[in-house]
Each structure stands twice: as C-alpha cells, then as structure tokens.
Amino acid sequence: MTSNAASQLVKDIMQTEVATISPMATLRTALQEMRAKKVKSLVVEKMHEHDAYGLITYSSILKTIVAEEGDIDLVNVYDIHEKPAISISGQVETRYAARMMVTHSIRRVLVLDNNELEGIVTMSDIIGTVLELLEE
Image (cartoon, rainbow, N blue to C red; front, side, top):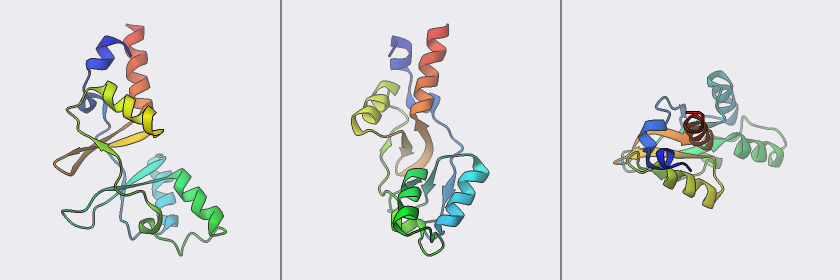
C-alpha cells in the first residue's frame, strides 16, 4: 500500500449506511433485502446489548440453499449466519484492516465502537482508496 493509504484510518473509508437484518428473518427475506439494497451481505442485528453482531453473505445463503434443496422459508438467518462477525475499530490504520482481510481470506469486516455498529469496510473500499491515491 502507498504511504498515504497506509496511514488512512478505517473510519475514513468505511460505509456508514449498513444493511441489517433480524436474526429471526427467513433466508427469503434476507435475499429480498440484499436485492433491494444491492448488497452482497447483511449485518445480523444483536439480540441484546451484550450480544455480538453477525454477518450473512450470498455465499452462506447459497451453501444453505444447496444443502436444504432450495427450501429457504424454513431456515432463519440465525441458523446460518457467522457470529461473531470479524470486526475492527475505526481508529485503526487501513493497512491493518487490509492485512486482516488478506490473512483470514475475508472480504468485509464490521467497524465497531464499544460493541456498537459504526459501519462496514470491504476489500473494494480499500482497493478503491489505493487506486484513488495512485491516480493523484
């Protein structure tokens, strides 16, 4: 990463409008939300204050559809979401978010502050920032 991109903070590039869903929603509802919001993942809301956020992606839904032979009305988000979702502080330099994503082969991480959702940062956000800096 370039030195400017490396010193940029996660909070400066994160998306603050995050699509969320209830853990009790069906997979059909999750797919409808993803389509309506034009996103590939949804943050699964906490059940209570001390709970952790989760994440559901197209990949996890597709795996379930194949395993359940297409019956997406009988499976809830809660049954298949990744929890706790991998997260990072917005006060961390972007290079550490990038390193974490590469090391763990993930495409997105939640940005939390005191266990509250602040945003989400994706590999595309990081690559976009690097490309912008290279064009300057």
